[in-house]
Length: 288
Image 1 (cartoon, rainbow, N blue to C red):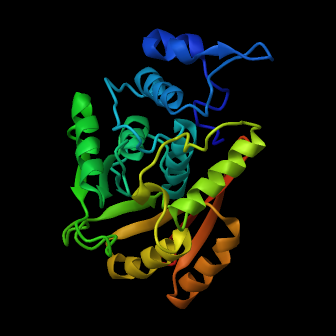
Image 2 (image 1 turned 180 degrees about the horizontal axis):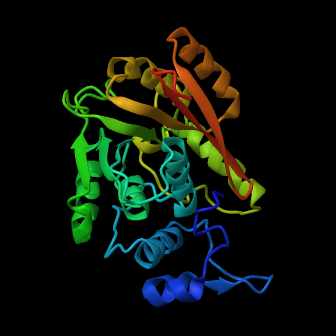
């Protein structure tokens, strides 16, 4: 993990339970005498996230509708720290404005961006229920109301158009795109993960997730290509466009696309345990 990520040394479950008592019923001691939770249980992951937000990020409360994406926070925090390095800012006094494409009901990236670095954030999503849930999460903590804005993208074909206003300037955009091509593809990936974990029983998406959060036509390849193409129109209003890339083999496709558009880009590797991912960052100013 990133050296500034406070979760690098694992979870202090005693401290987390003290700040969020409902987590207690999910904590157990494993065969190695370490306290942990069953990360295959959505409710356990939800209460771990809530405990982390209350303990380390000064969040009063946090909720998501049943069945919505609830991914672990340490990896999300890593993305935020990497963007801080990309912008060459590591303090909370910098006046930074960021855009989270696909904010989801959890509103995690805007929350972390504001609470770790004091940035201002805008989150956008195509699903109205996610927008309403994200707004509710912002309203639960008083200090977030002045630093986070949530906007509904009413046209699913557009990523930035209709969201970035003519007079606005963003230091960065970020995105955790839908990785899978279909529901079947998503379930296949989950089955493989459960097999690696040697878990038996019915296949469930342990971190939850709605259709628009997990899959889209063409998967991440077509989604990111569309994002790259549409970013050209807003090249003078954004310092850095960024997105997570799940499949390393897809990078060459994006690099060719960026080369055709005369964009400058860089790839930032990230890892969390055995999970490997990377950030693709690009701009049209030649500044890399």
